[in-house]
Image (cartoon, rainbow, N blue to C red; front, top):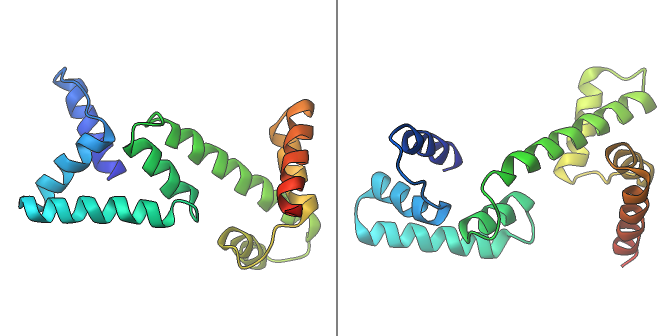
Amino acid sequence: MYVQKTRFDQKCEETKQARETMEQYMYTYLNQRYGLKTLIIEWAAAIINGIKTYQKDDHDIALFGKILRNECDEEFRFIQQTVKETVIALLRALIKEKFPQKTESTLSQLLEGIISGKSNMETWQWKKIIEKMYDEDDFKLLEQQLTQRIAG
């Protein structure tokens, strides 16, 4: 839906029409896709229920829910994607630094294990990542908050 919404927004800009919110666009999208009012309502309900069910387990779903409810700017997803890519790149570099003799395939498997949640990120790894991403004061604050959350 994001891809289609981006294209739709571009057309709106070209024709000097107002952009729709994500919630409005969801109904436009479902109407174009299914046409029948009953199917549109069923799919909209399924999307909303899916968000409610999985938003605590997946930050991408939580963000989509916030965008859909107009609680967050749509463009924030690009910032989130950039942060995610940065964290992955830093983690890859840390793994490669710790295991310089391992093959790219093995390094990719280690990285994928952490990303998928099959393996835990080690404390030194997340500390190093936030240390590189934030200034000293923000790093200390984040380190303290994360340590408290991990401790329960």
